[in-house]
Image (cartoon, rainbow, N blue to C red; front, side, top):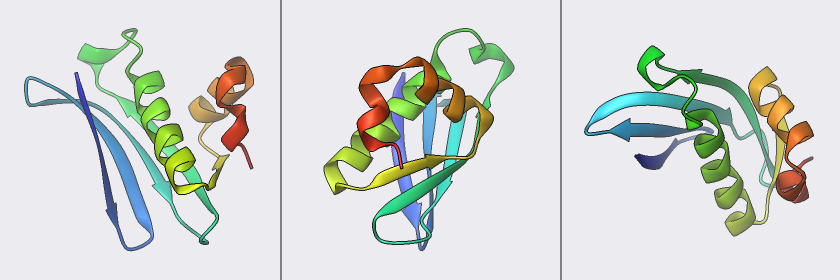
Length: 93
């Protein structure tokens, strides 16, 4: 599974691909210099139940730590993951 980040202007996303096939994507927007808003997560039918959403979130958390910014999770999936996983809450806004 390959997870990559793409950013353009004030939007960005993490995308998961397996053998070149898109398995899932998590999108975010950047309203300011110090935080991002995760607004949507989608996982393809073939990838459901394989932890792809969590991998996408971890990639964005890693990026937030590198840039020293916070995350506001408006997406229900991301919000639930932050409640569930204590070790990523350091980037929570």
